[in-house]
Image (cartoon, rainbow, N blue to C red; front, side):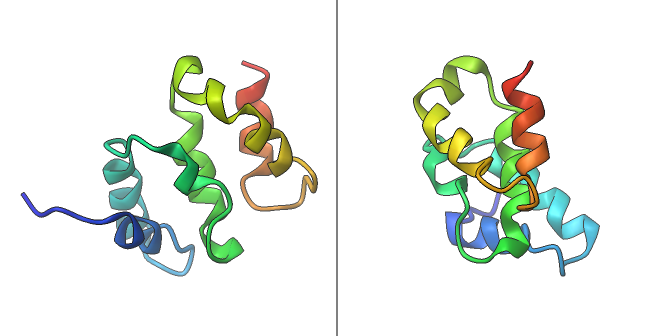
Length: 90
């Protein structure tokens, strides 16, 4: 098994990558313990997949990051904002 660092995983999230690479990044993100790295890093071209990496987490995992989730909603047009909003209402 190849180990990936967080930078490599987030680079896979770029919407300019193929769907296959993006899906691989999402799958690898499931093993990341510190979720803070997924809150609006780098450029907006990775934000949607960062949001998708977050919304599949449990309430207990997300609870420490609620403030960060609400900050994401400052502009509903930001990539991933709707995904975050839907997750907050679950």
